[in-house]
Amino acid sequence: MFNQKQVDFLNWEFGVFFHFGIRTFYEDHRDWDMKEMPLEGFCPTDFSADSWCKTISEAGAAYAVLTCKHHDGFANWPSAYTDYSVKNTPWKNGNGDVVREFCDACRKYSLKVGLYYSPAQFGSKDTVSTDYDNYFINQISELLTNYGKIDYLWFDGCGSEGHHYDEQRIIAAIRSLQPDILIFNMWDPDTGWCQNELGYAPYPNPNSVPEFPSRMLPLECDCRIRDNWFYYDSDAGSLKSLDALMGIYELSVGRGANLLLNIGPDRRGRLPDADVARLLAFGDAIRALYADPIAIAAASQTENYFEISFEQKTEVSCLILEEDLSAELAVEAFTITLVLNNGQEHILYSGKTIGHKAICRFPTVICDKLRVNITHSSGEICLKNISAYR
Image 1 (cartoon, rainbow, N blue to C red):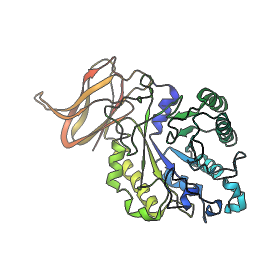
Image 2: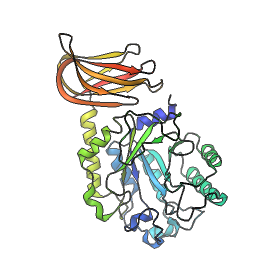
Image 3: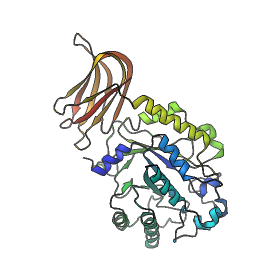
Image 4: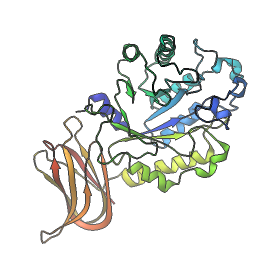
């Protein structure tokens, strides 16, 4: 069973990831290439985290995640524990703070605040290092102390293979500083990774990950709007189409997981204009399809089938099903059928898990009654809502 923090997380549904840092200004670099990226290169000409958050709020996102420190070690805040940070760059004469402006903008637009931190970085390859654990905890403590309430802490496991952190000490520090925080992916996670970077949730959705098979974890599906996580001039042609983004939405949110879509702010410190237009179109398309159901049925908790009836013959092409997340998730297989006046049922859709939300699209039918049949379950069936869409 999910706890209330996890239920709240699933209700966020859609967030945007911002990969922005010194890597933004060194296009020829790749993860772990160990190439130097001098601090003088970091100098956005028109930085505006406010414009980022305004755009994604208009697109319907509920949360945002900022890369505070990537694998290169560059701190997007004036950290006291490294010289490799914004405080030693030309931007704002060293007086800038990307994290501060990001957090303030999130709160201005009522977005949940997420901070990304890469535990591993260049030069931290010792298998065990108390000094590095201290550095890690000191930087995380800055982020969790100086910027108000942080809703989500996003740990990237890349580069940590074979490294042994003092996990208990690290988690104790995090939980003591921000008791209500959600942690992604590592050590004591509240949310889990979908195991790919394409935005696709597994199906059936197990609400768990291989590392924690017995722990209920809402899954998050991260993916990129372009080919690269950070901004590249050269990948403008890789901007995903609206159709592709809608497919990702239905294979993430539509499978009971969250979608975290990455956009790399450019060297101005703004979101690329084409990406803004695509993101806003994406938000419009989601609202056009799913904002206004043509019918909603409250589902019985005792029967293994549920009907949705219409006052007159109606064109329908989609049902959205939702289980009650305060109960055990029991549905393991179901069908949606068209019920004819003579009692015949014609299967329109066969599905597996439901969880937070199952978006079930099928060819448009004209009907006055549809039926959801639960064909396999592991316990009491608690559907919260069934809604129909044209």
